[in-house]
Image (cartoon, rainbow, N blue to C red; front, side, top):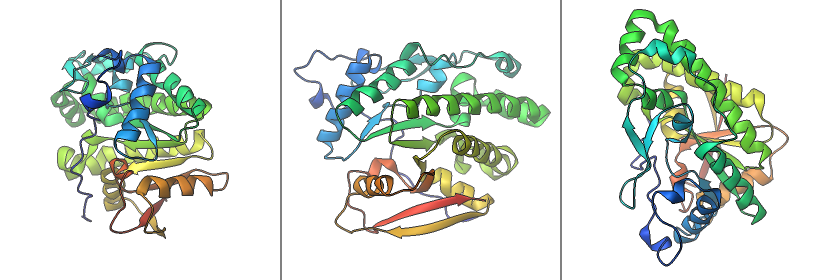
Length: 290
């Protein structure tokens, strides 16, 4: 197995209390209103001396839109699952598609438009299917189903993938610049090499192919764990693109966005949490999935 990207970053975005002091904002409401989400995103950018605005600030938005019970948290805790909505994996075969016109997911999409109207470069953080599934039902039922009849899990994941693609397409309509794709619960360290090889790797490839076939002219940043895990089991072509060593990682991605042709560009082997930083190795890793 090739080396898997080591990430010390949390996939959720802790919001410093400093940026909401002396404002009308309060927890947990700032996660639920497009204007507040945009305000926090823009001020997080300034606070971290970043070059891009990122939304949302957690990995629970898609799962919540599919029925997960989410506790929105407070100044110390990011949104997280409160309890599992489902206890029988077969119930998930009948879950409804995400309604992008209501709830927190709509507010996130609307916040993109607000930020674009302010001439910001906007990143949408999208969560992968295995993490979404793990927020809907206890993982023990997922692994039990994988042993008994993995086609049930595959069918559910396929439906989740399709919803992820529709979410991304709507974000593109709202002029989002970059899609950041992570799937923290799909890492090899969590699912193990066997499950990764038999289902998670294929699910990830399928989700990315659907994204590639459904949207145009975007930069899609894969979490380093996603891309290096895929490289362990799939034949990925990785091209190193060197950039000016004085640039922050986010600035380098923006330059790539500005100079691309009318095609999607997949990059990875790194972490979007590093966009405010000048990296020791000024490289962007462009990825082609064979």
